[in-house]
Length: 429
Image 1 (spheres, one colour):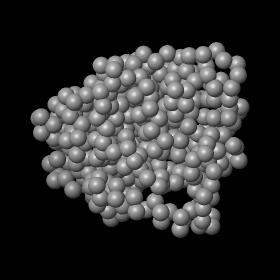
Image 2 (cartoon, helix red, strand yellow):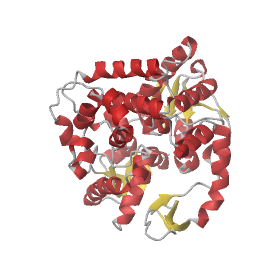
Image 3 (spheres, one colour):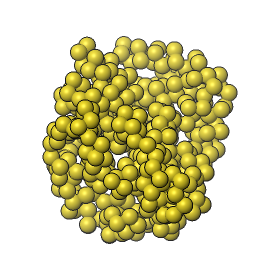
């Protein structure tokens, strides 16, 4: 926990950011949680009003404040549409940090974040052991793209989840250090979900980089980007993971750092520099340098390796495909055209835009577990627009979105494959 002076300093910095909000209510129109609940407390304006008196509310009803702040997907829809330019996500992250500093972590989160996530080698080993044990809780189920999926065997929990891979991606590939013919070298930050659940995305990314003559730097030992801990206000674990990854990704060893996870990209580019203020001066410099080099893999391939849309852009034959924009990619980083260029380069597919392509799918990381009914309600709307497009495959650029859409489409009985944009591109190579 923080001492009271540190806590007071954080609250003061929060108050300085809050004065920008005009309480205009524009966030209501775009908030996916508010659209489902209709509660003012669930929209950004209501949360910011609460935070105006945070120091008083925190002492009176800390659990109530935490509950209201937790009912947020952190999708960034409010910030992206705010006419006053309020940095809503920055405020929410800081507010959660303040609350955790005051109240401490729950015993469960302390075990998960500080006992497991903050120790990457132990975390990797633990999940490697969990892979064969998942058969006790899940029954096999097809996800319509030839990959393993599973359903809860517990009555009343009808959810289709992505199974842990028998062999994690980093374990199957090992350390990679190659020099391609293009003169460019990219470090590949794998991310937890790709490593543990979607190794096929990792293999597609490596294939795409090698095909384009990109040198690859991929240390076998990597840690989480830290977003689960930071979203719960645990900056101690977050900074520990930043340091761990800094030791393995030295910016002078490569030209760019690429990821195939929208959330990892956004976290490294925007949140690492913002919350690295307690690191040393040298570490801060490395964080900023690394953040500037970090790109989504589609952005890297299109903007730096100059991949262009091929015949698939005008093809009238092939399977119909649509694309879902991850919030952390489009709303946080402004990356939307590049994934579409990648998938249009595959002539086996005909691309068709869905309605509300950039509307949140409702996953939100731990939000999906804590508020599953709201998450599923938001997800059903996304599933409906995917189905309405008439596609046989929906692509996206975020494994968490894939996780959510697989579940939602299965609940609707839709036989639609969910794939990553880099997989669609790699299929054509």
